Image (cartoon, rainbow, N blue to C red; front, top):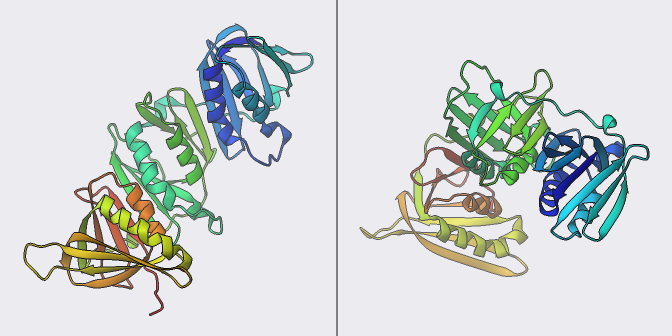
Length: 380
């Protein structure tokens, strides 16, 4: 193999695929990145057997070939090189890759590319296209609600459900639920796609990789592999699916409410952040006092309060339009901050039916995003 690439492109490609390198590889070769020529491009691939990422960068290929080399070593080395052309040669006999960039040179010992796990072929004709911007926003608004601990592996994933021309994503960790839908331009046609449970980490990686150059994300399912593939312009992400049945999330969403609040998103977020300073010492429990106005044509008031037995307390009142009765509820303030951080609309709606009922958060004027937060006990 003999190829030349720009240092900037090589460094960017390595930073993308290295996210799939395991910190404690079960096989020595999994600590490596595979480098292979592909027509007039260089293919970089990494996998931990659950998540695989492949990136292509432009290259001048003089001689085709493939090798795997330690990913961290190569990434650190390339990061120290000047922004110039990098020439790479492979010695087949010793499985050593020689790099030259300006006056700098290095030799990296590798392993045979034939030993590297195979990456399935992507079938673009059977893939479902999703607008890249919408996909990224969906993952941002849902992925954080998946469980971080694997006590219940099914909850570490995000449900993807295709129905006609609608894609729904849902995630829950037992204390909160996030559901987001979007309309597909072309739908799934005659394909019958069973609901998929994709590890949240894999979806977050796809969302992180999406750039302004990506118009759409192509979602494909290799036959009988228990995998899902996400194809972008120059990157392919492959993930194992999580087996099992996702909880009936629709049964968790309240269908009615006794009190509805309409507030400015930034105001409510700022109030929550002030209260979190003290609430984090009390299992993140914050009280939210909702008081409708008793004077016509004047706003009601929401007061977010956090308390620490050791450090003190804080109250942050904001004006809001309130429909319904006065009520005091308690939520995990971190969960409220998480959802408010991903709402781009100027105003937000909060609905509740009392201190023992779940709270529902939605962007004002939209019905494609719903977030449910379980109430907390204040011990009072």
